[in-house]
Image 1 (cartoon, rainbow over the protein chains, first blue to last red):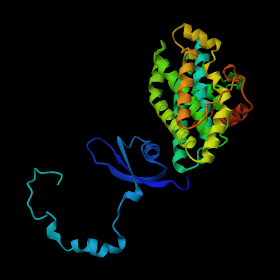
Image 2 (image 1 turned 90 degrees about the vertical axis):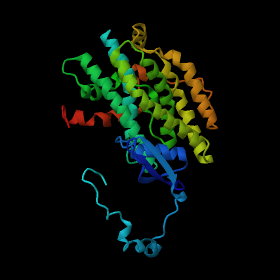
Image 3 (image 1 turned 90 degrees about the horizontal axis):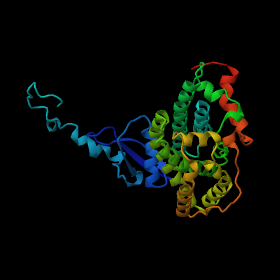
Image 4 (image 1 turned 135 degrees about the horizontal axis):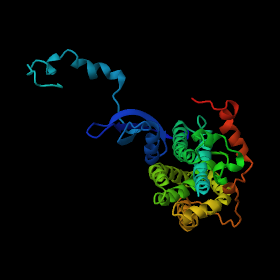
Length: 93
Length: 250
């Protein structure tokens, strides 16, 4: 069990919502990962659907490159659609 | 009639109670956090089913009985679980083999119990069946994983299956209460479940590259209240609170 791979777990809490990352776990194969996810993350009725993805399959951005990756967006407020006047009737924007 | 019904319910519910207690011992001791939680979930499912059965028994008994008095204040010989479920958690292989050999039977029993003329038992069976379907999937998958895993895991799960095999035949023995309840259309005729049980178990063992034991000698007694040496220890722990602090509640 020391050699079990790490899996990322995504749960859809109800129909119509997107799957959201809720944590990770160890398992030797995809079936076991699903069963473990069911037992670890949905025992209090948290979900209606589960995805599991091998963590190794996720390509992540490198924190060392955060400067050039994220900072250029910081002073470009015009990219936010905040310059439009919204009618009062429009909610949830 | 009433006494037979109560004895019949003990024959079903005590299996869930004692197996639930056995699995509960693994809480915090599972081989990994994931399997630890999975086994504890199964334990809680079984204890939940036990509560439904015992609330019903308490109602039948009257006289101030409640689910706790039914669960905690009986003597060893008054528990009617099969010997299989009281066998210890020797290693993970034994816990899985015990679970598997019981789950396949449990599922078949509940499928039939859903059709009981006793509405309460039919309803409990209907509610429990989804849980037990999952238990069966969980334990069958693990049988295959361990059997078809490493040399070590194969050896250990085969040893566990071989050792526990002698307790399987008792699952299909009928007590007097069984016979009486079958005659009333309330109970399940377990003798009819036997052929399918061994067929299903063998096919999963085969898939797991394991041998189906060919043992002709079987143990029995639990259903009559004659238990193995393990039972006293289980009850000592199970009954401790109610025996030490009578009538205590949460």
